[in-house]
Length: 326
Image (cartoon, rainbow, N blue to C red):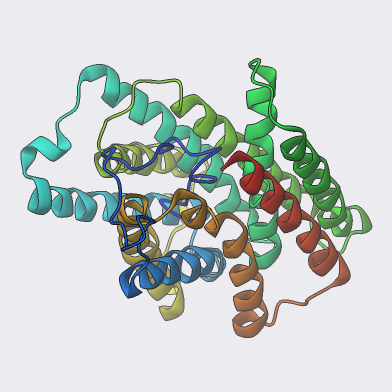
């Protein structure tokens, strides 16, 4: 899962929900409507392509790296970089949080980046990156169901989108039933999406740090430690030989830490302040399409009928949910 991986959608499913992280409106054009300059479209391009490409990078990294050890290295490298960026832009006050806010960020970080992202990293040892991305695209659907269980009644159009998306998930998991892909890997991605959705849902109810970038620093630090503990429990460090890691796996890990967890997230946080929220939320159904195309182009992952049909159905369901919830 990307992002830090991206947190579901920016409106209905993200803990960063709201008009902007700071509550400030974006710039307006001469008609009074938001003005979308070239910088906004460049930022969207970064979020679309970089977050969409993280599934490919994860797949390449775990070719020769242990899954949880690589995930731990990614977040332990990205967190200090993001912290330095916050200190440079906002000073020490940018990272200041209360004890309760820190505890909330740790809990959410463990759910999102260890339970959610970690299971995806583990699964991509056997599951194609494009298929994993399409299964992860179901996160907004699960968040809607969690909201429903807590008493929130979504619009009928939202529920229709959930039903459509679940049908797509059934199609996507069919290769696991036929033995074409490991069923255990597919189920790991689905469970990871569920855990990610629960983390996003819970973050909306906890007292999180007001600064979303500071929240991500503490979430990634917690995730780095959590992934490292899981790696030790699995015996990954004992069997890890740095000399056996391929050059492209090292490059993929560096890409995940710098571009996936730092550059794209910074662009995303900036977009929340400068662009209409429904436009920013479109990454939820653009990222999996980018991931499928990159997996096909770079790793020659087959575009089978479950991937094409199931993926189209899931993305359509997510589109309906985002459109109804915006």
